[in-house]
Length: 315
Ligand code: G3H
Ligand code: 13P
Ligand code: ZN
Image 1: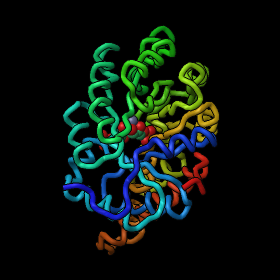
Image 2 (image 1 turned 45 degrees about the horizontal axis):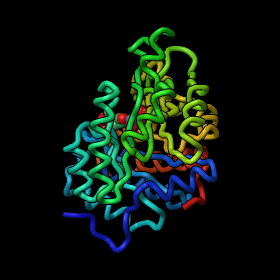
Image 3 (image 1 turned 135 degrees about the vertical axis):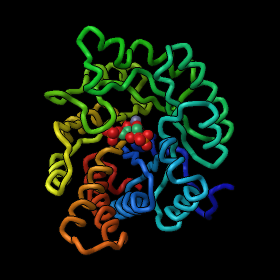
């Protein structure tokens, strides 16, 4: 089965080239259910922003391939903006191949847990297959690590992306974009104290790869304090959560980040609104009611992201 509408999903090439020229970033939003996809697509349509819908392996399993096709078809039927369907953190050649064969237009092969040579070999294998079908490939060099990893100044160079290796990685793999490690991490607990990214490293990488090569920032949720508070005010217990402040994201975009991955903020927005709804409407048990609250909250958040990323009216 392939995704079937008159309107095609696109690979990321065109939207990245326009973003690079005009120095804005495109949000890559993780989907895992109907309400998230509706919220993200509606927000992007209203803002006339190009959109990367991304699905992790776990989310793909959660939704199921048959439902995923129809959700993406629904997104295409309901909107006019350019949409890319991207596999987030593909772990193996087989998973990437399965998604390419299904009609994904972009895949990430995450070889960051392997050594340099093995990462190159795996990424190149995916690129060689993907390019036969016009599918874009995102690679990753360097490791994203969370607060629990306790990174010391001495081991930063072993974890963050080595700018001197980046060009060789891109040349030998042929990957179309590269995710870099400069201090972000996945989830809601990104920093112990002050949020800080290694923007000097990002600038160095960008200078080496060239201004027209797309760099990707994972783990880029801002973990907005209002959203954390909303969860905690209505029964949640999310403590010491810290994300990447929006002003740092704006700096990173100025330095040339082209794709920004967001999942945690969507989860916080959705869960906070659902918690609030249920706790303020104790006799209500219609899922459409509380899921609408979650959907509206995510939609507002995505609009805010699009403004920060600068992709409004770029569709
Ligand atoms: O990068 C990780 C994304 O947030 C996806 O998370 O594997 O729990 O779906 P997941
Ligand atoms: P966050 O956990 O910061 O939202 O990052 C998501 C991500 O990088 C998905 O690949
Ligand atoms: Zn990620």
